[in-house]
Structures are given as C-alpha cells and as structure tokens.
View 1 (spheres, rainbow, N blue to C red):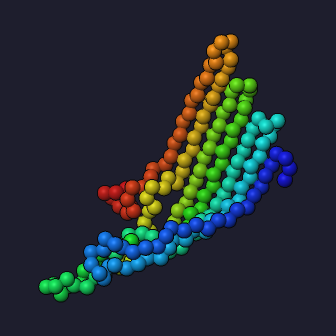
View 2 (view 1 turned 120 degrees about the vertical axis):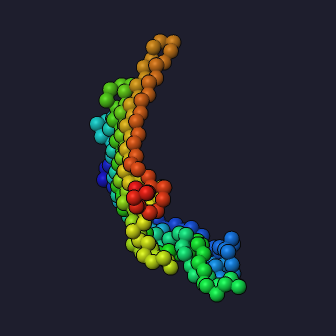
View 3 (view 1 turned 90 degrees about the horizontal axis):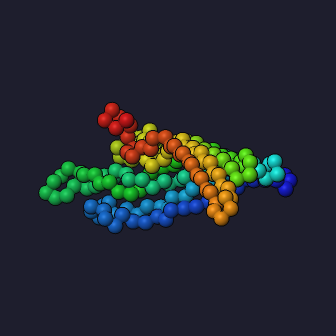
Amino acid sequence: LNDDVLVYVKTAKGFRSGGQNLRAPNTAAFIPFRPETAISYEIGFKGQFFDNRVRLNAAAYLTNVNDIQRSTLIATPPIPPSTVPGTATILGNAGKARFKGIEAELTAVLFDGFRVSASGALVDPEYVRFSDLSGDRSFERFTGVAKKQFSFAADYSADLGAAKLKLHADYSWRSDVPVAEYNFVANP
C-alpha cells in the first residue's frame, strides 16, 4: 500500500507422497495409498509505523488437506485354519481435513535500547471427513496441535563504556496438546 505497509494474498500447494504398507500383516493389507495434498490460502498484513519503531504482522489462513493419511482399519481375509475374517491397521487415505487459523506478532522499540515483542496464534483443526471400517472417525482430535499459543519478550541493552549490558526475559504459553485421538473419561 505504501513504503511501510504491505498487504498480501498467497496460495500454495504441497503434498506428502503416497506409498505402500510394506509392513502389512498379510498380502490383503498390502494396499497402496495415494498422496496427501494440501492447498492453503493466506491473507496477511505487514506494517512498520512510528519511524520503524513498531512492527505489526498478521495473517489468516485456511488449509484443506485431501486424502489425508492416517492409520485406518481394514478387513483382511481369514488366516487358515480360522474361518473368521480379521482386521489390520494400515496407513491409508482416510478423508479430508481443514485447518483455519490466525497469527499475529508485534515488536515495539519503546525507547532506545528497550524492545518488547509479542506473538499469538489460534488454529482450529477439524476433520471434514474421516472414516474406516470402525465407522465415522471425524470426531477425533488432531494430535500434536496446540489450538492456542502466545509469547512475550523484552530486551534491554546499554553501553557501559568498556562493557555492554544485555538483558532478556521471555514467556511463552500454549494450550493443551492432545497426545491421543480419542477424548473420553480415561483420556480427557
């Protein structure tokens, strides 16, 4: 928009390669799986203000993941002498997921030698579609994803003649991160 303010729109496409379940328990489970593809859209703002003493960056994004790869349950033929069909857990294309989020960061030089900064992010991951032989699994949580996180920091530096003083303090926080897909009494 001008020398100090940038507004942008971005789209990107990425993938995780397909493959085969080489450690499948039998030949019936030796099923190839397709690549997982992700298409993301982002809109953002980057600006510097007050003689470049304040910097603000913010972005909102949406990512759609098609053919998401997850451990899924499949049927397997009986293994003789049994006549009962079995199941196997293999890597497969389970469905579609969507991630929506916002991120922002602020840095400000309050006075010469003293700078504060803050950042924050919110993400909402959800399965649009996810099922296998056990049924609908779209209610499951995403493991390893913190829905909220933020951080603060302060830095001070001063010349003391032959020496230089540098101080730094920071704090960061993130919400609970699920380590298992299911949410039930024993696994809240």
